[in-house]
Length: 290
Picture (tube, helix red, strand yellow):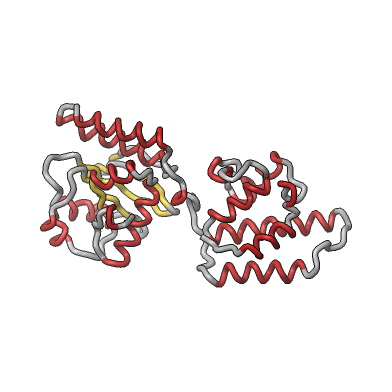
């Protein structure tokens, strides 16, 4: 997330006329339309109203939570809107050296990050699963234990769809291609993940991991995978499976721990992927990541 310094935020307040809770000449309606149309972001999302519902407070919250590329895109779009409004109204620039100071701010943000725009939901990792939602998911998970063994696998797939939806990951239900079954997919940070879900008594070994890796290898080069085994994975299997793969592993304990801590699944994916990139290991327990 961008570290906007207090003095920089004061400049933003000044440039975009945020005194008194306003932002330029936006009404609530036109500000919503602007953010949806220009940035495909819902500025009315409760995520941005934690410090208040005024337009200025929501914008400050947005800038605090946004990843750097999204923050820069928003500021540039607001600047263009501001300049067009001044030109249309035939007004002189009211702020001394406004353009130079604005460009310095943007350069400072861009110099600390890649300029690549992050696709998908740039706020997924800062969303928390609310208490009621977490409790509901926990109950659903416990209810699976009460089912007959044959029914648990299907119920687990349904539960995972609900878990993915709680983090706005645009899940797709299980589907079948020629000769193979995929237990679903979701999108996180612009990346597509195929899902393999297992609710079996014994921990998963290397054989099943290799089969899933084979499915991923037959897809587009950018496809990733998540193998979710409620009863975990064998140490021998993980060692035999090796490192440097295009999938990550999640256990039932990981899911329970995340729900207990109200950690969104998108954040779990982010941490798991980073751990895999840094260590080469496809499975790092959640309690070592948070």
